[in-house]
Length: 368
Image (tube, rainbow, N blue to C red; front, side):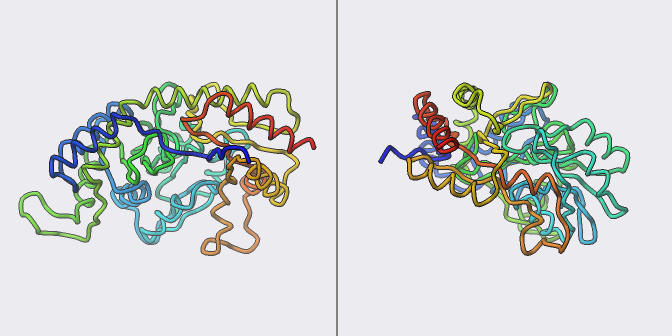
């Protein structure tokens, strides 16, 4: 049996260990400490926003951003159908309804044409997701949002450092939300960040994050808030990761180039796009196989796993899930793409010989 190659794994160096140990030794192990402040300050600089706010995870960040924008029961929020379920669930947490827009066939991000079709008098916000590391086409989205008076909350969970027309994601809409889960480009184990240039939105989110306790009177709470804080230990890990962010992103882009070389010339397949206006950070290297359905895809993944290569399927469309399913509803591009998509090993720790082996096994499985 060949060595096992996972889809993802974190990259931890002596710097991360040093910073976390310092946080532990300081005694500030909960939601106060120097690393919280430093991580927020440096992440705001990294993204290019005035403010950044640490949160306990990306899902909490989405919920907190929505609540801070005033999204409530009876409202509608347009989200892409092809995304991790957290995007839709965070909308439901507010009492609002997620409305599923189809995706663009080239970028796999939300379709601006379909956003227009899904707007109603109850629409209050759009959440474009920068899927698998590629930015959504933000200018048309911002134009629609301005026309209808909508908030734009960028879901940047998979796209740390990705750029749209030279601007980093998370700095383009009213706010951005990042995840630092263990498989992300930058990790804190669990954790997340809200980024924004809007001081009122930032202050509102900061207030609600800590049980809505007012500054002037300790343990006095004027409304229902949340415990969505990050720990100082997590922030220490995150700061060390952030200081290596460009190195990590460069390696991710190099891994993608190795896949490009190894899979060049194969008919009936596509790998991640990168539009001329985008910088893709290739959180996951993705393989789209034109003649596949779910059964063929799953057999392909099973055969690769037997050769020591871990893979995972694309996300299911949110509208397929039992709690969101409506009879007869189907976004055709989302439903087509998920059946054909496979995420390949994309870890920072991969070397060229690993990618060569994976590409050779892909060819064997496709053409045997």
